[in-house]
Length: 150
Image (cartoon, rainbow, N blue to C red; front, side, top):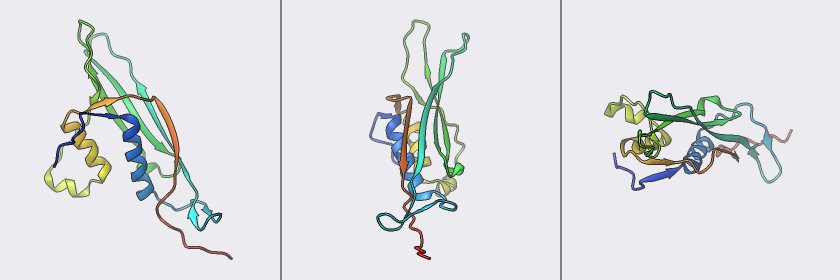
């Protein structure tokens, strides 16, 4: 596994990577078909929410949760825990991923590109920059429906 080149990544960049995964992997069952400019599936709304959780008074760790959701295929929805250290002096470390992966080499073949990206970022202790707390966008599934003009 190659370590990522970047030392930091914005949550909006993670959101883009997740949306790319959704475009490829979304379950198209039940999606409307759009016949306006050719034949394609209707768009699906995706949403990113970053929720900063309170820090207990006895802890030096502040936690936050990044949530990526789409309204159609819940199996693609993801919650990503992040955390940072806050020292008694008031100095703060930047956020990093708080993933708990107990992986073996053989399990890598069952992971998708987005899961591998998260694992690589966690292993490299890449800084997570919260550039937005909320974002939403529409994705267009890559799969193409069979046209039925009846």
